[in-house]
Length: 109
Length: 115
Image 1 (cartoon, rainbow over the protein chains, first blue to last red):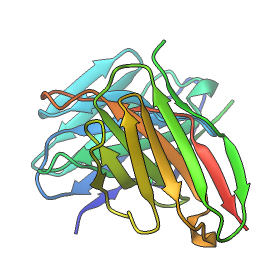
Image 2 (cartoon, chains in turn purple, brown):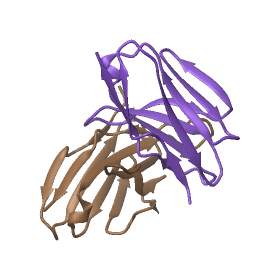
Image 3 (cartoon, rainbow over the protein chains, first blue to last red):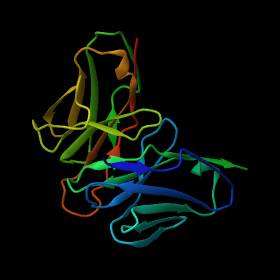
Image 4 (tube, rainbow over the protein chains, first blue to last red):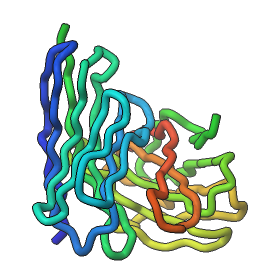
């Protein structure tokens, strides 16, 4: 079957760096997405990786290794507003999105 | 600012009632989707549509139907609500597949409780 694994919850300190991992086993691969979802709100797009390597976008970076079935989202200079759930999703060979259960990130002062 | 609007944020219905969840997008997107989101699970696709009057079953279509009479509107229908359909329902849209990211834009969600 198809599977996306990410930690359920992580805690980090304001101003620090945190890395949220995502491993996947899917039928084919056509890109990996990270979305951010604040409590009670819509998920919003953060990043997209289709080739191996690091994509940097301000304080957020996303890394992909297709051979390892692995990605991470790196958040730098954490702010309280970064407290949210982070959803990893992989687009499979049928161009359908397979979603992880999300990682709830708690930022402490 | 582009938007996906879901008409109801919170609904409480009784078992057996017919429930309509409405979703409207203003981005002229071809694709529209209905997901449900439950604690501890990834988003699960119920139905999607890539054109007016077209619909495709997702992973969990049982107990649901959809309607897309206009490009901007995609409705989710629970013909006879059951308690196991208590969930958060998310509508999303995206442009037609053309390679690249084809990012989803989500609505804020409709939290349905079935008693």
